[in-house]
Image (tube, rainbow, N blue to C red; front, side, top):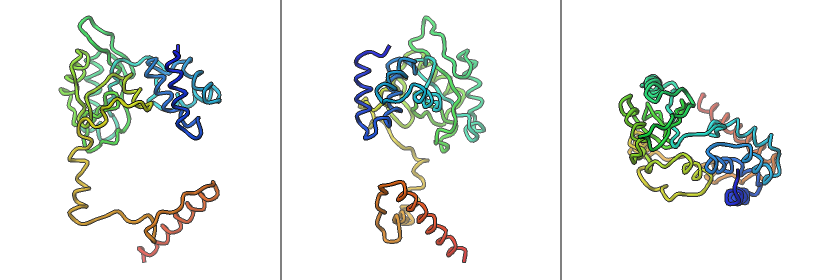
Length: 253
């Protein structure tokens, strides 16, 4: 069920946008925060508030992998198994955790008497953190440079209720709490912990040493006017493409 408080917050999210249907993504995160997954009732509530069909809401909820149609544990543990993380140990980590937790992909642990929390394990695609491979995410927070041993210790600590901090972020909250943040309701932890590590800042340091700066947005150094219509947007795109091709031809000559 979607209670009155959640329904009011869904309406609040929709009201943030000039076109209220633009609020659907954060609204679905709020549904997950309240219900632990995207429920039929949540879909109907979003559709009613946005004046769209339940089928349209379902189309979005089934397209993006961050939206879950079955209950998620207290902690969602994602192991990157894309190419770089895989060869750096991600595949071994995922296989070990499946065995250690006695679950398969996208399955949730049974809570034992000694457990304080449950875990949903999933292999995920690139987390855009290749400089820290192999990478895991817990409720969308980074855990960098993982090993089979550190990954096993991580899930043991989570199940035991031990406070854990992400590598480049705050202490880990529960999955439902994280979903509420993604819905646009801050938890006050945004500035807790480092936001970037040394490997991510190497390029910036090289640019600083060599005096490199970003080029201006166009030849005059001023930003182009924002397109007001679809026709203007297409014209701007065509102009930008032509300028790029001209510059490339000059470079080739």
